[in-house]
Image 1 (cartoon, one colour):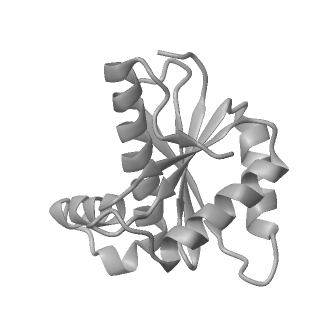
Image 2 (image 1 turned 45 degrees about the vertical axis):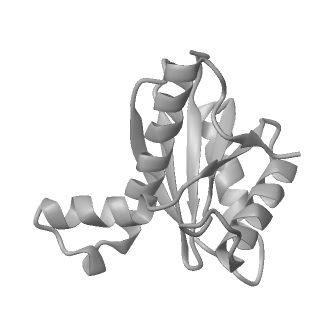
Length: 151
């Protein structure tokens, strides 16, 4: 397992959930929800600031495919954000299949007695946590970095 803090980014139309790992890559925890700036790049600047602040060595961006594994408009959007982020930072950006991470996070909220509709920003962070924990578990079991590095 590679050592260092990793980030996961769950891209949505209105918000971007962010999670980080501990330096040993054991546990994913929420960081914040970044408001999406559809007319500019302030969300990219904020993400880049967070990468610097936490000393991140790698960013995992959720790659939202449909249940058949096909691209959707959300896939294109996430890739565009990943590319913009990669251009703004000096660490690798990887794409990782994120099917059902937001669904899983919302189910966890409902199971804990919280209303998902009132906790959207927390659900975005929780989806990033689910994505990052999946990435950490995959790397731990395979010994290889998870997902695909953005070229």
